[in-house]
Length: 363
Image (tube, rainbow, N blue to C red; front, side, top):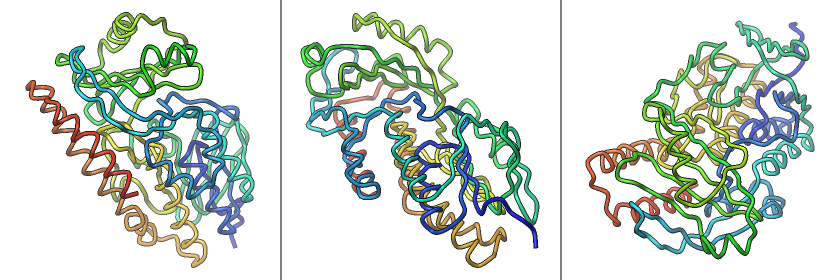
């Protein structure tokens, strides 16, 4: 009988990968979680939960509430410099470094082995096994879960996805800027702030945290040629000076069916395109898809069945929230159409916020 080092190897210790590793380990599967960075690590992100924090707390307990830095009670949206929406909308701010590591620690507590500072260079699969080649050795498993982000090595090396084109991905640029809580309240109030402009098909944001603000903007890669210039203009309008500026890609098109899984391989989170494209939100879809991937792994190992048909169950486990992602894709197209033809009105932005509310309540 073939010797395996692990039942499951998860590549990437973000929310999706850590969630998958935690659930696999709780199922009793011998689980390895590999992370290319030294843990705990940070990641470019606005760092904001809306009411969906209820879903996350339901899984990981009140430890999630303990890392919330600040809560806000409203959102303001400006269009061409004029206030368009001022609406009650509770949100919860956090550090991705603390949040991601919280779930990683849950995976460790469940029994998963974690190796950080470990970059994966190749993934080799055949009918009997999967080999994961890394800077800290080659590991053999029955299944590999690719949770290694938008530029997933697992996706590329297994032929599931060779990359995203410019219309299927977005680019966001952001910076966290120190600011006293008193100054935050004075300048922005106890709310998150969005800025939309008639000559920019995208949006800008200010997310207040504890002693700092997250400032950023994003648009599709196909329109991002002058994004840094636009970011600097935004800072100038707000009278701000950027700290460390970071950019990151966001997938805007779901990889479905044979493109997010194959025999012995599953993609979750950004690697599989599990992101609500209208708002660029990927944390909750990453956790949901990671836990769904764990369900597939458990079934396959329990029944010793690693056929392609067995892995098709992933589509069934992901069905409900995938429908939400598809709706978000349609709404993004409506938003882009409205911006392109200058049809944006206050009712549209109000609908946009109601959509987010409804979407989160369904999770």
